[in-house]
Image: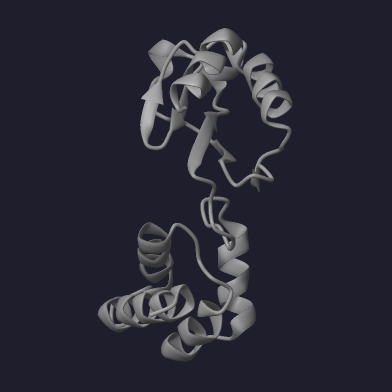
Length: 155
């Protein structure tokens, strides 16, 4: 089975499982993203039909929430905290360093598909600001030098 067939089957299964929930759109979108890492644009018509919504409504929700992606993520996803505590502890300097080092901005993936960069508005690690998360592992008190070390540890 090719990847598009696999994606289609996963989307159909998630829709079937969750479409009966009140306010099912967000649970379906989260389910798809959790399983596939993104919401394939080809899933939008199926979601819209199952929930009796327009494609524009589904597309609008996907693009309103920064959490949702419509392209596959990089091999490693880096979430940088942009909340007040991290900003107060030189988070903007760290953010600038990360963007410069990777050569990408938020919501982008490096050309080699290795890293995706995403903003997050609190990781719940305020006592150890600035914080970031790489592949679901939270790191605190991250300096530009520590970020470089974390990257090198990824191999």
